[in-house]
Length: 179
Ligand code: PRP
Image (cartoon, rainbow, N blue to C red; front, side, top):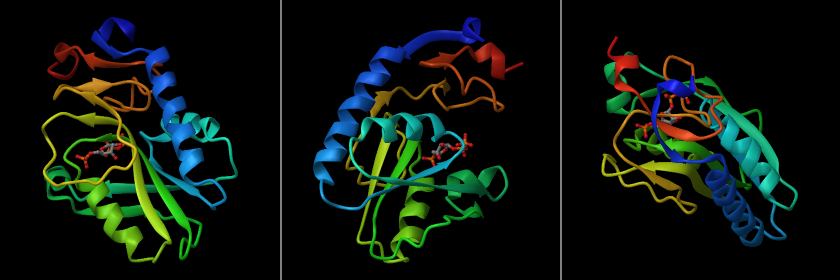
């Protein structure tokens, strides 16, 4: 697994430090408020688990799963909800925890969908942002670490469902996916 990584972009320690800082800011911003953290399966699971523990305050967690319509649909931003929230978010503060903003289309769809349920507030925290590839403008209140436009895996991000359990984020050797 480690031998397939050509470069570590963010170490376990750097990620921990960033998540801790983000959690402290979120705890401050939502002090005395109710908060639901929403993660989109599966990539955001690691981030959500660590972010939740970095927030010193009462929070709830819920999950969604989405899927693109076909392979080209990812870039069209048309997604289908496979698993919806169990929580009614009307009048609640919602914070979406994403692992990465790439084109931004998944988040654009989610923000529109969740906003229609009339939450009290709706914001985004993303662990990573891919540099210079966003097709839409996403207002990310808690922005993440910048990664180059490369095949990035680890800390939740996969290639063929593998590498999600790497404790760091790194660039995958192109020979792995060009095989
Ligand atoms: C990834 C990631 C984001 C999305 C970002 O999910 O977790 O949800 O892509 O891409 P975008 O900004 O171009 O829309 P993916 O569909 O790979 O599923 P996964 O979380 O199960 O890995």
